[in-house]
Amino acid sequence: MSENNSIVYIISIIIILGMTGPSFSLDTLEKDGIITCNNVVGEVIAKEAPITLIVEVNDTVSNDITKYNVFVSPKAFANYSIGDTHIESICTITDYEYYKEIIDMLLESGILGE
Image 1 (spheres, rainbow, N blue to C red):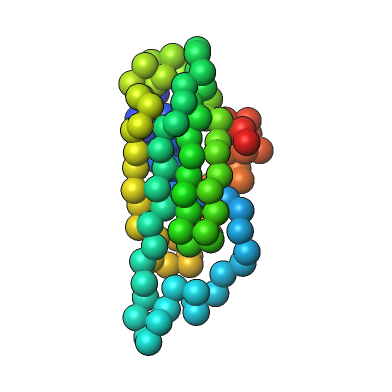
Image 2 (cartoon, rainbow, N blue to C red):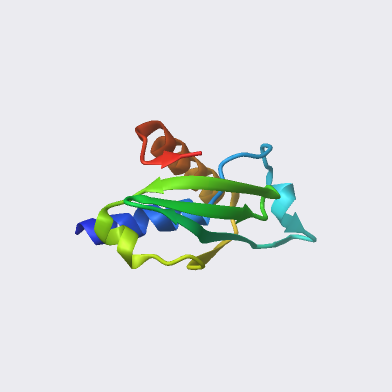
């Protein structure tokens, strides 16, 4: 996987989910036997040279808005602009919990900062 693809993957995961909020059950996403998908929207709101993107994640699953400092390569830094957004639908609790775990790992590794 190239460096740029790795950064795109990491940014996408970050943008996909916020990481805080209460525990959820299937009842949170289910109404009348139908699963309701929720959107998680991430937007680059600032850039701090030479390698930091500030990403705001609006997580409608947990009704939480979180800002992350994303540490990227200079090449990736140049490829993103303020206002770039990504919208991801989350339709299962399993997916939501999986991506929250990834966010936790990225925070622990130092790739992300709050």
